[in-house]
Length: 536
Image (tube, rainbow, N blue to C red):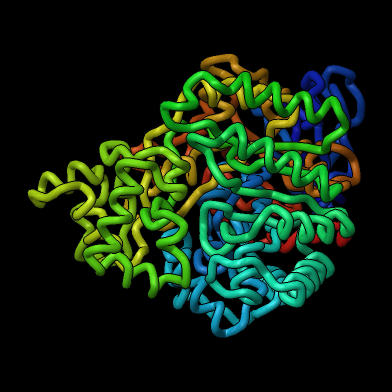
């Protein structure tokens, strides 16, 4: 007798086609049978050791988070309800060009410092790996949901070139090519870049093109956080499209937003640019989160020259009065490249997390509000915070536009990504709410997408980009990574005031045929593993 039958479900299978009613049978981690309209036909109903009555619930493939920052959270927090409770069954980590493999002892410590705001210092996780393959092997010991990995270009550059703003030598470029090739051979799905974060931002397009040629040879894709989401956003998008086409590499535009006042209402221009490239034969997809504010580290707003040399050099510049004055001028007057070429508006920068508990009273306040409490200029508060928190502060930037968010999510290549940073006292609610917000707010409440369209955006489209032939659809023989949700009540619990509240209306989530969420509660199942293309 089979393991499980999900009875009388409204199946939205991920293809974009209309839903149908069926009994779905799961055994051995796979969907073994789908019996459509079983009750109405009066046919023999499938039997199993366990039955779930899915009357009134939608059954669909598990959601794929195309932009996650759970690199250490998957190991630190086995519960991982932030994602499992949303119906996420696969996350793509190694994002924005910075993660924890491949590294040596030197670069590991540097990366830990550089992305403390994303993942904490990481000393509470035993980092017993150095290569991409070893990191994936570590995930294979058991995690809450599945994970795929992008080779982080900034980490590769740190390992070979360092944190200096200079071109790579021919020998260094050859070594970076080899490291990317090794990462792909060991199971990575592609290459990420953070082109507003050091040291990846110091790579010229020609250098990136050469690394993308390697990725293309292994069937992977390039996933850049490109050079501007503000004043130069459309030019930055065009540059990434040209680069990927030159390299012959598929392109996935991550958190494909248009932010700041200079881009209000400009989504149609971006979509026209994408459509022109697609119609000419380019292979492009994108992901977005369904919120207007962005989230990053406070240090990320600094100009690129101020970030050269690594964290200790940054702190030294911030404590030197003349250099700090130059940084302030670029931030507040000319527009730092770290702030996407737009002069910073401190009233839009909300402090969301600190690493030093003594600074906790500033969390939830904008930099301008915090400065008012201290009786000083906003820049002085920001500088003091950067120094005292050792660059570990995370912030929300309230600079997005709802019309852009809605237009981009309708695009034919759109997928979903939370860009969820799980650290900090008040993280962005997208970390806990992205997928139920799509289903509740944008599907049920606003009708921006149909339910069938939205599920396809969150399941089969990303599975196709990741080259996963047995995920992303409800089909016989496919992996039983599945979600059951109530389309009338599904909603994010997370808000900006209470960002860690779990969603409602998602009573069941299965990872590899086992219940990660059962009756709305997290089980102790750790069925997730690394997902490596071509490996079943």
